[in-house]
Amino acid sequence: MGAAVSTTQFFLHGRKHFTQTGYLKHLEKYKSPVQSSAAIGVGQEGADGVDLKDKVVIVTGANSGIGKDIATYAAAKGAKLYMFCRSKDRAEKAKRNYRRNFEQISGNRPDRFGRARLGEKGS
Image 1 (cartoon, rainbow, N blue to C red):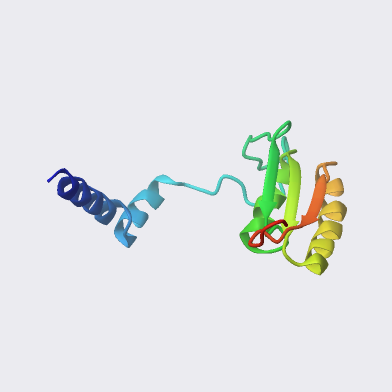
Image 2 (tube, rainbow, N blue to C red):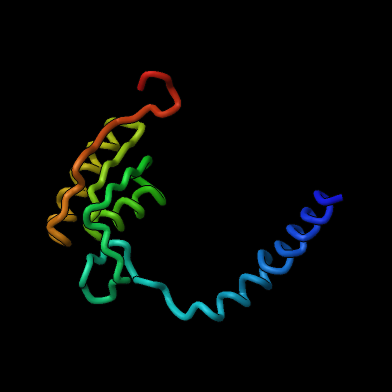
């Protein structure tokens, strides 16, 4: 009986808050993005006030997509950044790109780059 009650509560909560209507309702409370770009460093105009100095961030898939944006954000905020990619060629391209861009933005450079085959044993 307890499982049925908790499942029903979970369903009703999800139906109320996680639909298009719920999204639009909550969107009204959220006035603007925290910062307009992932590459805004600490203390720069438009920054969100987050400082990741003395923090370690490990990002897989850092050469494209959301992994690239997370790596960009972490590097701009001063984190010690470790980037892993599946393709050696794409990892080298991302490495050159990050080093060139982040020395200009924040003086921070990603510390470690590596190729990781995370789906295989012994990699």
